Image (cartoon, rainbow, N blue to C red):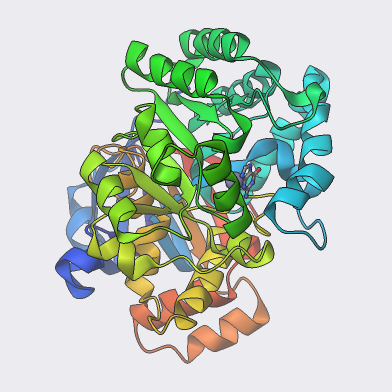
Length: 434
Ligand code: GUN
Ligand code: ZN
């Protein structure tokens, strides 16, 4: 169903550039009394209400939100759909956590009915948290991806997902083969990639769980289907990195394994990158690859602190990821709260406008979708959220002390969570309302 013209009046804030490139002040646009005009699921205009209201036809409905801030929908550049049921699992670091909690949970997604049930919950949870686009890991089972895409298609969401490829170093019940992983991924690409606002990501889990044959097959899929994504994990945990060195002794490092199979490129997104050397950052940048910064996960699994200034120095594209279920929240506001602390520990506190950028336009750039989402530029998809200044008594009281949008934004990111999201819109349609 297409939505015809409608306008939304509130404070409006969006990123228009990376603060690392243009400085914080030139990185955003803010309209204290703003108007966002939507037409046929796209943004038609954004600006000051006083300037735009007189230009509207008399019959256009204007929805006026009090004590609210409209921003672009949030973009989660790394999350696992089949880990929804095991978020908050105690006590282990990456490799033991995978074996103890993750693999048994993902096993259940062989059952399409289970996948359907969790897909609905998962998509609802994204929207409740104001996330309008995500790059999503499925399980090894093609049915998991069918379930997720069917649910996203129903709501006309812009979503990227893929079936996990893993043909070694995992339980038998959860492995494919180089051959079947290739064939099943190809069938999913043909069924889903480019359908509505859906995109496919070739998804080898990480180097240790794919044979060289399977990584080569992943490279073939990318070559045969220009425009599909590559989504995997990279340099998250020190034991993992040692393991990759043992498995691929002929390669110069972790990233070089992926590079050797031609998996780097403009639509390649690597989760974590906590322990990258300068050379690897250089290589990510020159290939146009992106990194998903996943602070709640990196803290929860004790993986380490992502070095954002290093990535900025090399001009690596960086988005923000929740990495649920290693990450502990679906909320990108909550994720920014933790990102700020990760940066504090490295002596480089995250500026509120950089935070906004990471959660919106930066994510869109990492996904090469900044011509469609991530900002409220006219022509873009009408994916946006309405944040509630009065979501909780504490937020309400704290924001009464705020003297600038910069301060308000920082407080929203520090105290905010799903309760802060009053309404979520995808392609101009309301898809969640508190
Ligand atoms: N590395 C390989 N698989 C996973 C996973 O499921 N989660 C995280 N955080 N890291 C991984
Ligand atoms: Zn992950």
